[in-house]
Image: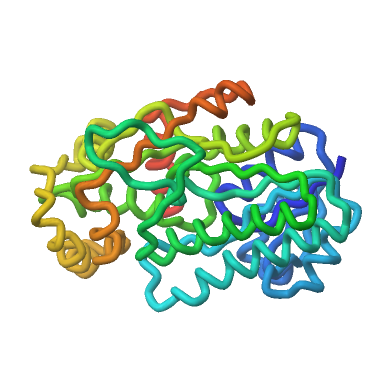
Length: 335
């Protein structure tokens, strides 16, 4: 069975390509440019895969890449929480990418589409509220990436319905674990902690994460099962930022844990501290005023019950293990 993975050189895309190849699939790995040696080197080392140009901004490339494909894994996106002037690019990549990929899949008569979304498409809730399931959608779209992922998935469902595509969506939380060639915003968060960026205090919110290898398995299960709808792929634990920083500190005692949780009403100082840390510590930028307005004092509480019940998925990598592996991968890249 031939599969196409878009965004194949990203954190999830690369790990998914590797797992599919090991599982006996004929893998076509789509990247923006096969001539970019730096971004394709790891994929080429995998050996027996077909590497193709699949820039979602180039519809003719996508149509060519889609020929003869049985399953499309639509993974490609621009993942940037601190956009730095890339707001238009983030939105266009998600909106246009969803439309181009799904229409090409319909034209090529692809049997199934597994579309990667995110738990940022789910609403934030108050501290004591119940968990959130796949029937719910985010309404606060001030953060460009949240808006992009939410609108893109809604558009994907609209197009799939119009074209009769067999599609499921996977909603991972922050993806951790090894196998990344460059940092994502989730990896930036852990690197920032390792550099001491949360020494003074951690924001008052949760940050659910899940190991990339568990997310890969969610995608493969969705492809192989007769199923429909949305599936949240998130870890069983829903830690706060302070708890995550505490785990990093327990793994590496040279990283001092946060002194406090920043009170909700003081959340406005977080982006200021973040800018100072970036300049002094060299830590990645991880906070913006829009993020504070959306997440501070609110909680992400995704439920993974549906994917467990219908697909038999379960978390195999514990919170501590995936953080440990993430930290090691960050150190290895630094060397």
